[in-house]
Length: 134
Image 1 (spheres, rainbow, N blue to C red):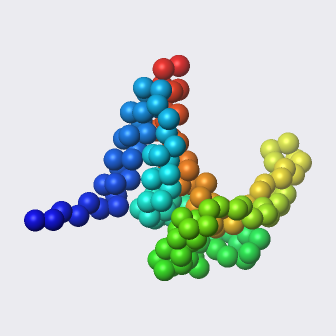
Image 2: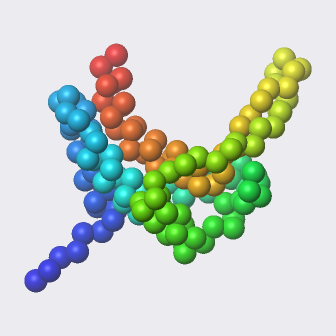
């Protein structure tokens, strides 16, 4: 009898390992690599980005989150896994600030947002463990 483990379960296990290893002072390199190579991490990141109110804002490449389907998301993930990550230029706009001045805001591409969110999801358990002692 064979059992299959879902990507969600694998990601959950990786996050648990990160939290455990961070509390015991171990290296996280392998767990971070496993987490970044897990498609469920990318899918979860996409869903979190899509619920952000600024998700529909076109950026440097004029792509919005609405233009991303599952096939394109899988392609982005495979590009990262196979070729690594090279960030693209950020679109910079000026937005009004409370003190009547404009402040700069950088808008990364959808791919860059995905990578950033994937890393955030993996690093959060690590830093929660460290900062919870404060």
